[in-house]
Amino acid sequence: MGLYKFKKINNEKVLIYDNMKIKVLIDEKKLRRRVRELGQEITRDYKDRDPVLVSVLRGSFIFIADICREIKIPVTFDFMAVSSYGNSKVSSGIVRITKDLEFSIENKEVIIIEDIVDSGRTLNYLVKNLQARNPKNIEVCALLDKDVPRKTENKVKYKGFDIPNKFVVGYGLDFEEKYRNFPFIGYIENEQ
Ligand code: IMP
Ligand code: MG
Image 1 (cartoon, rainbow, N blue to C red):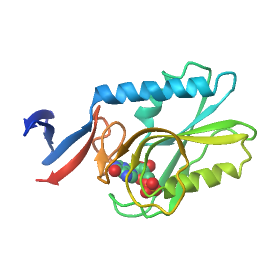
Image 2 (spheres, rainbow, N blue to C red; image 1 turned 90 degrees about the vertical axis):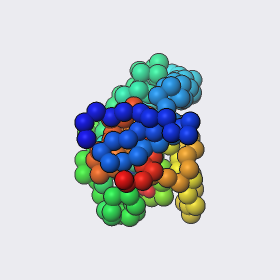
Image 3 (cartoon, helix red, strand yellow; image 1 turned 45 degrees about the vertical axis):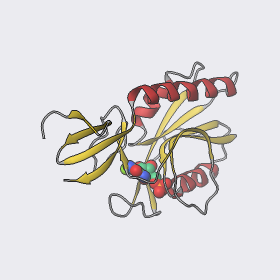
């Protein structure tokens, strides 16, 4: 416990913390650069439109905070929270809304801001659920897209990074509610 510290092991940046060995996959600088690009793309595409950013708590809270400041048009915000049943590292695909939107999205242009698409089932559920509320349209912006075989079509229009099929933490993402505050994306290599 205590402070976290980086170490260089075999020229790789590793964090030893809380009996975990966490390898840096995407560092702060790369995150910042890519988030800026995504914000610029959305700014360009949504010029003269009036989108609402729908962020999915809790995993997306850092991503939305950063990307919204790179979007240089007026946007509004709403938040949802979902939880998927199952153990902590594998999503079950059964999704439950634990906090719904505050506002109607009828006739609105919706951009869902997601942290990560793993099996894609959470996103699938969300899109279907929001679509039923008759928005003008829905697009998806996801920071991470995990390389897993999926049966569902990929709905992500604005994608930050493709990542390998590893369990990642940081920049909003958790393992058992911890590590969300790491400023980078890393993966747990082993539990020591
Ligand atoms: P999906 O339904 O399998 O696509 O899972 C989506 C949700 O599971 C995400 O919104 C995350 O909250 C969580 N999740 C999936 N993969 C990871 C991961 O590698 N680290 C942390 N959370 C994850
Ligand atoms: Mg989670």
